[in-house]
Image (cartoon, rainbow, N blue to C red; front, side, top):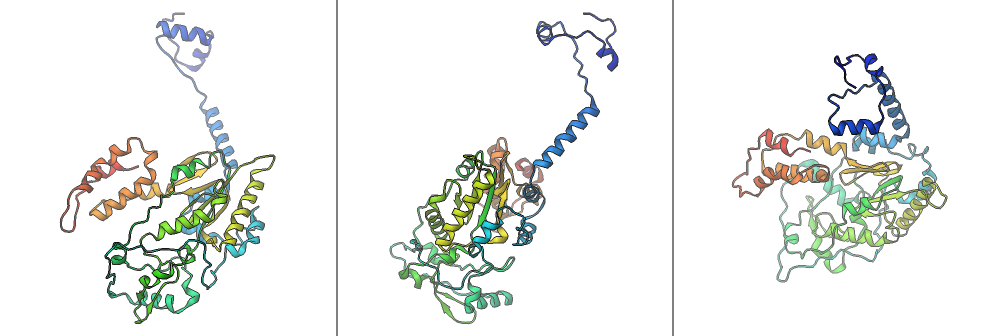
Length: 396
């Protein structure tokens, strides 16, 4: 069909004779079609888009919206026993409220079968570091921490974290050969799950005993002049994270299929199976995990836990029943990162970007300019001159 004056209006186009898909494809392949015009009903399209948006909103749980819209601090502050009363998992959690305490019992933890050991390099003798001046508010926190057994097991939200500078001791310590859990393996194990929970283990280092012969090596002095030795594993020791990870992995090995752990984080995932709903299965999984934590005296921080969500944050990304996507908070931090001015900031920026590397096409090529800059031998303060275009090329 040939037309001297091709139609220009929608009514003229729709009045043309219809053509089958096979005829259209053949004519298009043979080159007999010169122009193609696509008509769309904008009003109908907008209506369909709105309908899809409403369907998506209806299928999205409140917890998923909260993860995207709220910061971690806002989410932690809003978590309480009262806020969990409407949750279908409330009864299971209340059965194990001793695992989610407001305060950890001020007592020496039980022997979990794994103690922290400090193996020194042969010939290491002197591992003492002198006390340096501290701010007045830090002095009070440190003295209170050691002089009050009740406070020794607590870390208030937003408060100080007691970490000792065991620099010389760490330099003389033989590194532990403990593999780090693989992030991708944890996420892949959650495929096809529909309900998720995330538990944050509380003060986990203080729940592991020191090997008796190594206790004198942990001695620290305080501003008040007292000398203290740690009976439990303190923060700041080399190999302490490896010991903690090994302990948690060992104690929770029987629930690893549905509750993998990554250091102080435990992720529970469930789906409907054998005629049971995903909620029923998830209750069983939570009950098994919490029962195991009760047996081994492991505690979780209620404010940092998420229960029965359709999506949870895992190591820089959000894992849910629909997909795995970057954590919006990490993306915001990267996009708003200020211009780099020194080596420390460059390392921090590159370290943050590794969380999202799998979502960025040609990631290694984009960060190559910054990686090459980091490899240079810098002298003095190591000031850098990183232009905004160079940073933008490395943005996620």
